[in-house]
Length: 460
Image 1 (cartoon, rainbow, N blue to C red):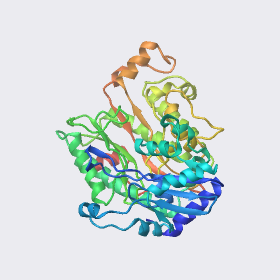
Image 2: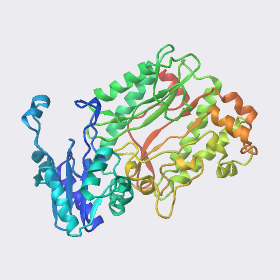
Image 3: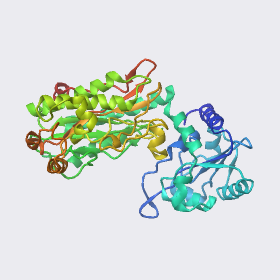
Image 4: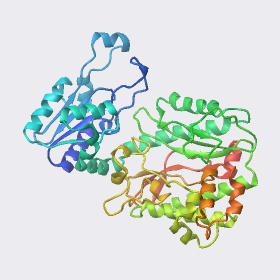
């Protein structure tokens, strides 16, 4: 945990933004794998962590703005619990570290909420993303299960997004720690991969780096020789000479802040000439995006700059043709770049995505596009100092998509399908790094990691 003054100040800022009512924050529950006592790794809700700081299950917190009180609800360990888990700090001790000095049994929460409802008090809650918390909210607040997301408090969502989007120096330090561990994870993958190994063997080593550093993964490792599949997790696929490996991974610190990096590297000691050419197109697009990062610019426009750079490179090698800006405006480039350039990052690797992309990545004046490719851009809004985000362009040659677009005759003014056919077994390339938006531009987070083709080959 940070010190209690930080959590108290965060709650005070939240109360000032929401102004009235009662804020209900729920911790996550334990989740069983295949029988009750065999549990998945516990991960606390990030907004609960941000405002309350207690990293244990089966809790709730009430921030009552109207009555100026803060309460943590939860049940202390019984002796039966202690026999299996050992002694732990009490909830009361942990709450005090957060600056909250009132702790009550979880059973008292229902009574408090019924009293608040009877008095006509507004109860603010966040959209639930886990079934157990959704069921509790439905029972406590007498809201149909299916209606919970639509009844979640928009003022609370907007207040939390505004607050969590700006990272403090302490948060940036934790994120840099996570990125540093992620660099070590990438180095393990790049240096250990060899022809004849399986993707699973490499991924196991990569995860070991994260766990050994005292945290865990910020998301399941994406490690594959089929880089054209955007989120393809490792399998028993055997690495073969001539292939490339795409590794997208991230560490989560013990404070639960995330890192997220991608590198693409050859199974052999060097890229083939064609692989290197395509790699350098992606690298140029990433650099163009990085150079554009600054406060006030729409990240959607940074995305489009990267798309234009990708299209220009593809035109240079004959896969695209015509006016680059017009090709991107019409969406022809999305045959090769189907996703967004990046996303916010912090306590979640896709920060605050549970609160809704419409609030995190967009505004009332800037709505998310429904166009193929652009609809997958999670962040479009103007950048502000304190934002932490990823920049991750790529080129992905998806055989099924190529065949569909060619059969439909899509964008024939911009795409040379005859030449694209030769790339159906090429795979995909992505390069990803994490950045802090500063007052004048941006700053790369974490320790450096080679990303040029020559640098990657040197590591191999």
